[in-house]
Image (cartoon, rainbow, N blue to C red; front, side, top):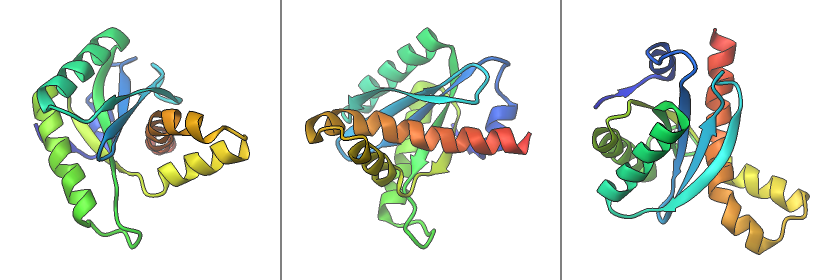
Length: 155
């Protein structure tokens, strides 16, 4: 399955269908979920990065349970906006996960999402242990919210 640009992806979605946001890290994939109006993103959870078939099954189950029909996957561009090795690896993974799940996807720049989430949690005096457990889903939510803001402002 090919990757879409964000506007085309959303235009093809059924009304009231949710988006799943994914922040793919090297060990953990953060998961976020939009509301049905696609205006608000919330952290949903995280899954260990493992076998593609198992991860795809988990995402299909979440999509079926929550009424989601598409993915927004974080793209870790280099600070100068170019596609470095991490971004290319994320694109390769995005192609594989969309094929394995059957869910269409768009990619969204996620530079500094984890840093922003960590900073906000530190300012909120969240302990290091609790931050580690929550940062992946929160980073996915931060990235998905940026995508939803683009959608809202474009429409």
